[in-house]
Image (cartoon, rainbow, N blue to C red; front, side, top):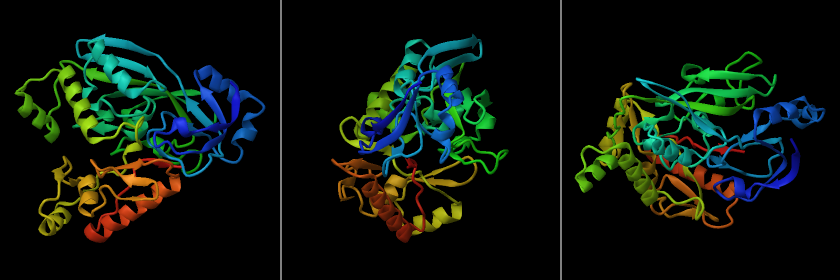
Length: 350
């Protein structure tokens, strides 16, 4: 495996921010990574900082050149692992494009991922972020994953419980506390992910936008392909295409509050968009909170808030990572001052 020097990262982050990786290695298979780890140059490459794992770059804000070794995951391949009368287990390489994998699974007659259509990024990032949309989270369709330990070079497998899934969270987003501590950030590279698609297939429709589509079309019993098409149409109407306008999708997590907190906010802001959660908490729509603070269409330098969806920050042309983060912090301050809620960014900032 060749380590490249001074690699431009603008094509590898969906914000389109100009930056460079001082050293970058393309991980196209497990053996290549192990060879690099066994090489004489590995200790020097990782002495100052653990490697930075890069997938599709769709959940990333680059604020400068990346000094740690960048491992660009490009492992491909998709297959049916097994099928029973209860469901299918489907596997994809970590470097496969997520949306293409969703569409491929439907083309093969294996439904279940359709609500997660058009989410940008690669398959390997899906469990890291526990991606979710329109009533389905990755953990609902997850079976297990394979990864390589960057300390030992050994392959290991994790099931859902071991991944520690939470709302846009997993064990891969946390730094381990000591050698035996939980947390795999900077310590592992996901190589393959397997999904559990249950039989019989059941549609997940309990979401306002999908209910609106059913009412508009008169289709009250959609199949998986119809839901896929609806989700794609909804997302395209709300969210900018990163190939046209640089962005990282939803920039902030939807905050959760107690019933009492929500009641207090509703007393002041009766139109606040909120959803009851299974654990008794209330989820608030971060986009609504940002819009209520008057941020839609505004910006800082060349970074702006998307005119059609306040939850999305965009690169209006030549934005730096610093401008994006200055804008994000200004939004956080506005929302906190008005609602007493501190919004948490979704993207990784490096």
